[in-house]
Image (cartoon, rainbow, N blue to C red; front, side):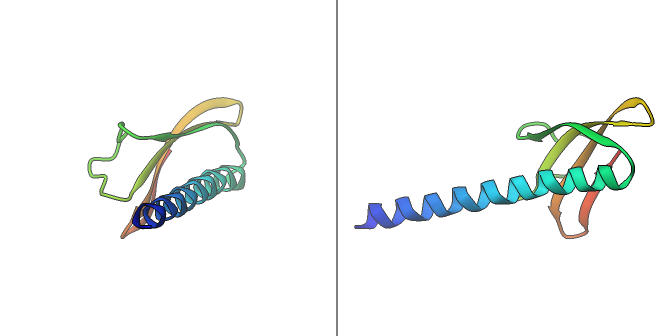
Length: 89
């Protein structure tokens, strides 16, 4: 019985993590399109912190590539901090 509850809790945690990750990827796309660009690639960085010195527990860092004004550019964003979303473009 205990293993069944633990397994169910694990499934719920994974579903919440997937929904959160997908919504954050969509938010990156909306932000770049709002600036007049097109998103090419969005990837979640597990081991890399990118340009961020401090990445705390529960924070997610994404690297993304986008086209703006005919130029290929790279950006980073950190979600989940006390100060809000941190964009580096």
